Image 1: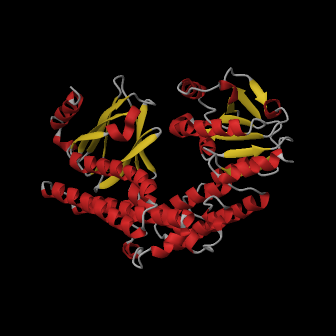
Image 2: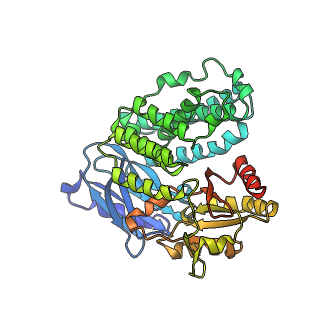
Image 3: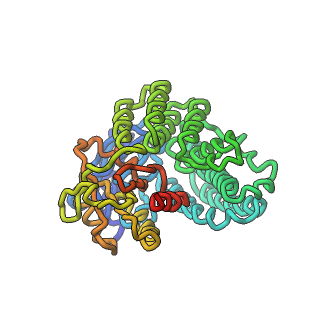
Length: 468
């Protein structure tokens, strides 16, 4: 039976010595594991790395002094988990459908299953935004208000049958409310960017919810809805303080846009975790989307000015050193890549004097790779004189790359892997470069390093190279 192992774990726990009653237990099973361990984190602090046994089960005891939300991670996926002192909580998850298959049993199972259900509903909102952003602001407001009311009703029904703590009630209601706020932010961004004339139709009180936002809620730093709302609020703010008629304001990877958001991080957040988290996130993007040496130097000065005690300045400086090799004007002539047959090839031999579009990916983000295949085929058909080369970043795991290629139906002759002598601890640097596009001219020189495959500017740039 599916939950036999859960019942065995719980039976074992009920028989343990009462001196352990206040210890909290987390256990469960990983079906189709990606690695032989799981990780439990609280905010950014790793509580422990827990090994899987021969049956892919795990178990871990530890002491906590108050209820809180933790992060359960099995690379590359993660999910929130509510725990209180003395809990015996078990879970089961299949990595083939991580979020959809995740289920909890034992103590706090009602709370955790509610949170995962809300997460799945919130993910469905991504499709809703794309479907409904063209409707009127008034209709969108009514639609999202209705969704919020349904979720609040669901929570109220569950709460009437349960004994939720005030802390968890705040977590649950915040999850619902901040998802609602986030949908408002995302809709506003899309309207401003794609149908700016319709922004005049926004009700005067459309953004009134911002008055209820706590921008420094320490209880919500592991809450997906809260963190995504903050991220999208920063994006909208970066436009609001820019000239609305200037379309460059909507380029979220533009150096000036990132700088505006970094300044707001400094002004808005007092909570150390939030300030450092968003600074790290944005400063890394500012580094990897820098186009010139001057921009990199300005970014370094921002890092020194920020001076956060939990900031890994050495790592950011090393990331800056990597980016310095991929600035506009840099030569890739001698860059080395590995073929699917494990041969080492220079970029010069791959380009053969043609313009080249390089696009990066990882097997850990296979869906993004799949979605790009159709676009690449379209571009190849339109621009036969341009080479489109796919560069995999999983250079420290050749098997991961090869296994991913077997799942995809396309020619391997355009698939290569980056070669790097970076130590294992530095692998995360290259994760910052996922789904990036580099345009290289006939002389092996980078002419653009900040586009993506669906950016209309990409084709304009390609045409300019071909017409030289």
